Amino acid sequence: MGAFILRRLALALPSLLGISVVLFTVLALAPGDPFAELATNSNVPPEVRVHLRASLGLDDPVALRYGHWLVAMLHGDWGFSFISRIDVTTLIWQRVPVTLGLIGASQLLALAIAIPVGTLSAVKPYSWFDRIASTVALAGFSLPTFFTGILLILVFSIKLDWLPFVYRSDVAATGWHAVVEHVRQAILPVTVLGLFQGAGWTRYVRSAVLDVIRLDHVTTARSKGLPERRVVTRHVLRNALIPVVTLVALQMPAVFGGAIVTEQIFRIPGIGSLLIDAILRNDTPVIMGVTFVFSVLVIAFNLVADLLYGLLDPRIAFH
Amino acid sequence: MASSIPASPSTEARPAKPLSPWGEAWRRFRRHRMAVVSLGVLALLVAAVVLGPFAWRVPIDAIDFSATTQGPSLAHPFGTDDLGQDLLARMLYGGRISLAVGIAAMGMAVLVGVTIGALAGISKGPLDAALMWLTDLFLSLPQLPLLLLLIYLFREPLKAVFGPEGGVFVLIVLVIGLFGWMQVARLVRAQFFSLREKEFVEAARALGATTARVVWRHILPNALGPVIVAGTINVASAIIAESTLSFLGLGFPPDIPTWGRLLFDSKDHLDIAAHWALFPGAAIFLTVMAINFVGDGLRDALDPRRVL
Image (cartoon, rainbow over all chains, first blue to last red; front, side, top):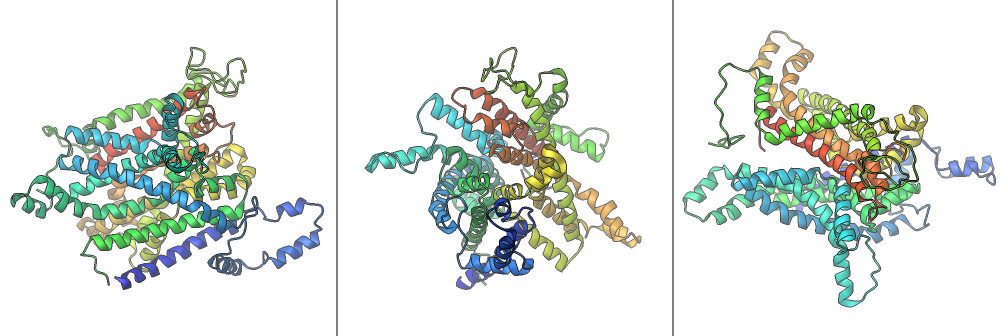
């Protein structure tokens, strides 16, 4: 098991390196000069500018600059925000828990929808339930998160006035009231993201269960006289969920995209809204940092999925 | 027994005369009722955005402060925004852009995907491995952050080359296409792997056909079905991607009212002008859903595996 984890970690490293190369290439290819502002500043003489460029290594060959950048990133030196003058790492660490909480809660909601609905659909394919569920799933899958967010705000915040639509980290309440307020303001964003993912996953669960339910061991279980419920939960679902784990991991980039949009709609202080703010204010170090963190998170989730896959499927040997 | 689940509950009698492959595909497509309905909806939408501006001749930027944020009325069937601009005219114009972005980005994704998938599928060994590593790398890139990053970095220079509208269009199509080819590449590679061992390919090779001819004449046409399905779905995701960018305020400039941009502009006026958000949102939803249903129907019609 330990060796397996190590081997998977070793495989994840090239991907991480690849992503860092992609990121750096994009930045290096990008037109525009971090010193553009100095160029227009008449207080900075041109020779000082040239000297500054040279001293910061901007005239070095690209490969050397990549090396320097990578070493700095590995040391945790991600620079500081042009706008708030705070270390990028501090800024990101403040906000990562919020994003992870949002994604985690919505994933749970999505699974709570997708597994029962997908399974029921596949147990009786082309029944009325299946047709309605499949149609609704496809419709939900076609509803972009920004539109669901706006619809939910319209209905639950503006018309009914039940739930707040701006997320506040400083709730004006104490004790239990604060907890209740935090939950209340999390309901809408988590629902938006959860419904979007749940709709997509329902389709995966359905086709995965359909694949397994035709196999011989299920027929055997049925002919042994096991109750249908037990056949489905023990013999079908256990096997069908294995490929779903991988599909869920493959969806992570899309999930992060949805999280960025959701954070932006509800003004949740996570790394997604940090990214948008940074882009709107040309805060390059923060943009690079957040993009890199997103990449690392995607790879980390893929890694976790692979490990889970190994745990769930005894046929995958740990060597 | 493994494939005893029918594609549709109705088992029609087989038509008397044999159908061409495309006729057979059309027959299977027609059995997916939602797909047929969606095809009609899609045709209507395309006709509306292509022909609509000729019938509804209100300019998209006519400002009228006596009629701001009005609900639907005879003069403005979809209402007006905070500057009194007619939303129907703006949506018809924006729809053209949204659909054009979707189709162009799909074209780019399919082109790149088929090229990479075919190269990987026909060559064994290191080239295949390298291309698949690249595909997996792109699959694990966080797409939206990178889209935003690319647009942030490249928007100004492209604007200078292609003009404000053309520059953003080219950029958005390129970046969305750049992140949409991986599924196509994987599908094509998988198809190539199974097709290149088939007897008819072997026969063509025995007759002295070059690799290029085998690929172009024999393998690619047979690998087309799944590619068409993936391409259809790609149009939908490209439309969503473009709308997302515009919704975040990082897509097209404010004077080009794509559907996502209209939503972005409307989101601070939800309490007084709900229609402003509802119409463009519904247009995106309807278009994307119709395309997804058509894709579903095409999968039934063209994809031999037919899992769903």
